[in-house]
Image 1 (cartoon, helix red, strand yellow):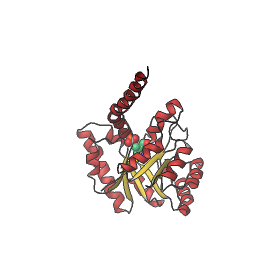
Image 2 (image 1 turned 90 degrees about the vertical axis):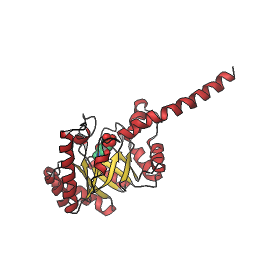
Image 3 (image 1 turned 30 degrees about the vertical axis):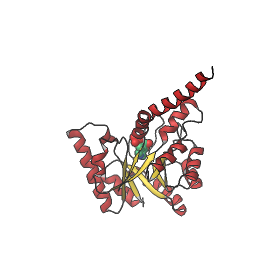
Image 4 (image 1 turned 135 degrees about the horizontal axis):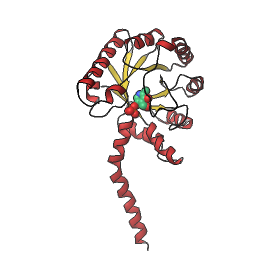
Length: 243
Ligand code: PXP
């Protein structure tokens, strides 16, 4: 069975819209665990637009499953990871203006810098993963610097509807997965996955882990809204009964 890591960033996105206490990504992480998530993923962005430092600490302390911390390859984040000691760090490229992660890391162009980060995290036994596009050169560079795994960026595939172009992106992902496994890397994938497009990704035999966030949080609004309205109606009726 593929290990599903649930990304709870967008629970924090909603909380940050009010800068209040709810919804709490820790609570969402605990629900995800109860629902069968293998692990929890959070992306601590440099601009702290959703997940905050304290969220990561609370989630790390209170979940029983592994924590995957996505972060940019910068000093501030490395120090934070050394303190929090998640099960795994996934390095992702980050641009301030982007709405979400836009592409994979340029491992080839930053080998020395990434190698230094791996060496910093190694003594804490933190697994080291790199988010890359399905490009053979990037995967080989990831192997050279001693990554435990790569997470293949499914973003380009996920943006497309069914058709020839999507099949091409899928083929790239299949070939990249097979190559990564052949050279000894563990293979994960994620970005933009939905129940419709995840089927072909889950069918790729080398993929062991998926990171999924946005669709799960969006769907949970649809599925949870009726319950929430019912609870509110009951409370309103209690008030009306006291008139
Ligand atoms: N993997 C990485 C590296 C990401 O940055 C994200 C988005 O935070 C995901 C997976 C999950 O993508 P989505 O939220 O579209 O499911």
